[in-house]
Image 1 (tube, one colour):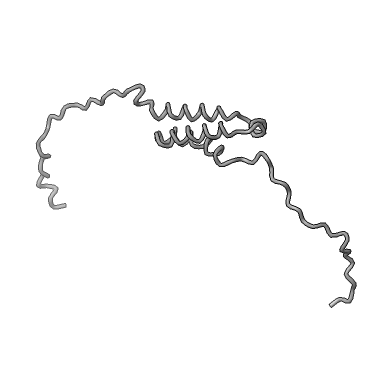
Image 2 (tube, rainbow, N blue to C red):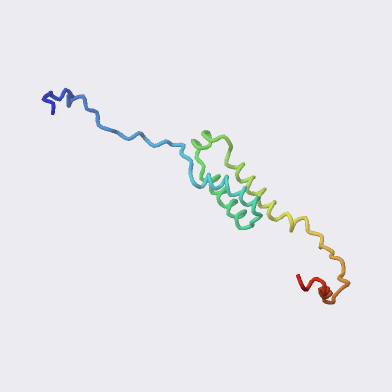
Length: 121
């Protein structure tokens, strides 16, 4: 081993201090408020649509002025998008559906038997 003296000075040691947390961290409710309306529109699930409205209103009411200035879109846009997802999920009830008319069945008997020439194959 080496016989050299340690050249580091103890008065120059700076203790580690964790950086302060950011004020504009993304919250889970904001992320869910943005994602759930799209999921409701793709799946046409009414439960996911109502959950999207719930999270969007919660995110809108819990938004602070610092978050409002830091985000690119206001929280009421997510509320509008979640309402639109509800319209998409309920559009069949709102507009109604025409009943499908199937042609009347004419043959109700069994299909014909297989010809004897195919039995040997």
